[in-house]
Image 1 (cartoon, rainbow, N blue to C red):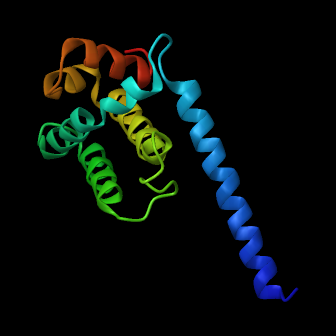
Image 2: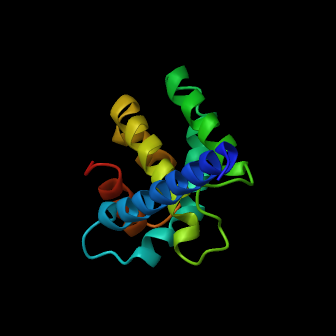
Amino acid sequence: MSEVWRVAAGVAGGLLLLWLALAAFLVMARPRGTALTETLRLLPDLLRLVARLARDGGLPRGVRVRLWLLLGYLALPIDLIPDVIPVLGYADDAIIVAFVLRSVVRRAGPEALAGHWPGTPEGLAVVRRLVGGT
């Protein structure tokens, strides 16, 4: 096997392992008693939340930059897990959103999250548990 094929196989294997790790993390990170599909249904509200937070001039600049980068990533057509795969297709997006929102809450406070939340109070409770129990 030529060196190019070995490198390609190594990259493909690494991406597969990363995909499996991200999928396992999403399953483990969801709040107890919440089905995976319920967690994924929050994605539209989470996108609106991220956009609202990114436009909030009262938040620190670093937080807003992080949020704009997240929106840019979410707009890209290339994902670690293709979105056509049912349920798991949005797993990488959900994990990255959770990590960014966790850092936003740590930096800007849980009040920023609650003040911009567009969904139901139950959805906000799930998001709070997802981003670190705030």
